[in-house]
Amino acid sequence: MAQPAATETPDRSQWLQRIPLEIRKAATVIVIAIVMTSTFAAAYTVALGRPFPRNLPVGVVGSVAATQSLVNALQSRPSEFDVHQYPSREAAIAAINQQRITAVIDATAVPPQLLLSSASDPSGSRALAQLDQTQPGQFVLPIVDLHPLPPSDPAGLATFYLVIAATILGFITMFQLRANVKTLTLRRWLGCLAVLAIVGGATLSLVTGPALKALTTPFPELWLLTSLQIAVAAAFNSTMLVLIHRWAIIPTWVVFILLGNTSSGGAVSASLLPQPFAFLNHALPSGATVSAIHAATYFPQSQRLLPVIVLVGWLVTSLIALVISSRVLNRSPAA
Image (cartoon, rainbow, N blue to C red; front, side, top):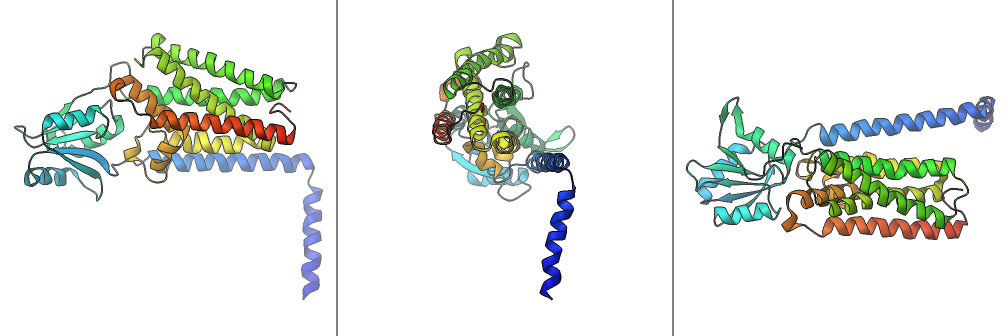
């Protein structure tokens, strides 16, 4: 019984060897491309196609008896809201301004009101407004938008598009450098990376800010954050080029496109994302850049350090890994 099994393996191997090498390589590339795009479609559908609140931070003002009925009227699923009690309307609005909560149910107003902040969380505010609307033209609570989005960016997507552009510019340029300038040493490669981040960040910021007026972010901050995103994408991809050569597209795609863009909070906020995307929003560079630019644009007085720390951490780690791997393996990303 063992003999047939022994002869079957060589026959299969010989059958594969009859296929020309270039056909096998082409088939491998096609299969990988199909798998990557299929997972891309699945991830975006799961994360962005069915958004609904998941522990959305909401403040309430008024007695528990009055506010609980209003919260229950809005809540259609368990754990939709993370409810915070505030002693006054002013205290709750201050929490919105500090980006600790997204909305406030004020039972002390006559009639009770739902205070939103579209600029804080565009998709979360839209979800709350949809929950509040029982039928066309009728609302459970009158809605007051404390921080509406500007006419230049009514959907709140300008930051998302900017981060996508910065990401693509970062890693695609590295692939093009490898393909066209194979003589670059590591030192010169790092110089090109720095020029790309600085000039590319300035150009994208000028287009999105002063030229199109889609974002009113102070230009120096927008430039810095955009350049950081470009540099992180370029440095990570450069490290992968040293380690796994032409297959560097796979981890770069996974980190920045498949998971990064999906969890960035640009199209759908973290409070509406399922796990693990909600967690990745705070851990990956794309989410950190979206959050930092958003805060610098709409809440300059209450910016948080965590997104900047995440970005700088990714950049420093990627650069250290690039230098070490290049010296250990004795090759630059261009080789």
